[in-house]
Length: 104
Image 1 (cartoon, rainbow, N blue to C red):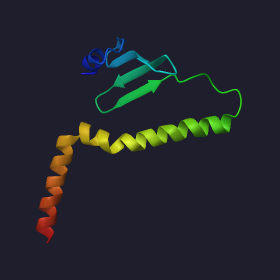
Image 2: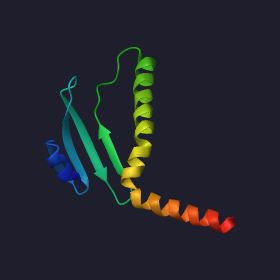
Image 3: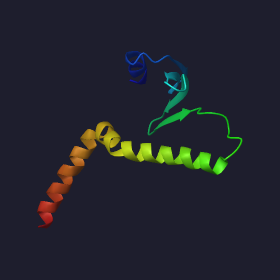
């Protein structure tokens, strides 16, 4: 599945171990963005090298980066859940509806 996505999106990648891929994303400002993807039985982990450690203004730097990750991860969470767990959510909503009717 992951390899098919990389191929369809024309993203260069290689399988580095079972369930682990290394890919090169292309950005506009940062031309190459390395991406590691690790898939296990219960989780997927994305890892990327962003840049070297800051030499100055470290507090502001980390506030910017961690704040940006928070905004993106939180903003995408519901959509990702709806895409990646659609049948689970439908079953859960049906169970909740049946349970609400039974307790009325």
